[in-house]
Image (cartoon, rainbow, N blue to C red; front, top):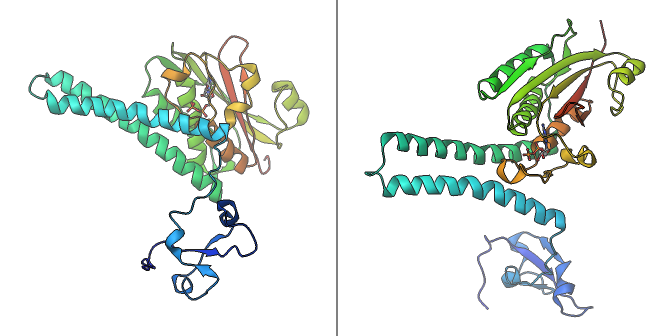
Length: 305
Ligand code: ADP
């Protein structure tokens, strides 16, 4: 038998002396070993079998299938657009006007951004799940709200993004970059899920005690007090009451008339949740009586001056 290059990924297979020589019997005995060990032990089979070894295929769960479907859709949709525009530009270069060319290039640009956003979200999740690294600073939250709202306002003409008046508030200890990510994701959603346009309002308030909390946010989850609470409301399609908690799950998307035509992989709110909880806060969603939804998140205050 010809030896295979030891630089390949080597695995060890113990001879299943005391059991049936079935694929099932092999499956549990595979582990990484140094290449030098492979041929020195008579009780070990050489590595010729690693790639060919039939291991019992684990049946993908319904959740796995859903994740693949969501990712597939989120990649194939923009890539098809990019391919379509790029092919047209290549084949019909002479026949299209400068204006059409600009339109196709803008299409390619925006579809590429969609792929990049998805990959960035996946990278952020991996980083956040692995290290939960947040770099705390004392920050004026209202300034961050103003800055993020104004950047988002530059991207939409259909919506009016407003900051509701609020009193002077203490600084909060938080990671500004991560909180900006949360605000961004919530604002992007407020825009995406209000396709008819409308007002998007950002509110910020301080809550010091349980009675105050129950008074202002009667059905909120339990939060650490004192805290600052950010609220972002829209006049969009709202959320099914049964899915108010589920929307924070990884890869979860509500199935409604907008979902097939709205970009998204069900990651934005999951990212918000990991970040807010890493700060000791809570995030929750509610429907507004007047239509649309509102997302609140709390950030605990060290001490109130
Ligand atoms: P997605 O990429 O699908 O937007 P998110 O995690 O940000 O993922 O949101 C999960 C789901 O929650 C969305 O698919 C959408 O159905 C619902 N959702 C999020 N924000 C809003 C909102 N402001 N209004 C209505 N539905 C929303």
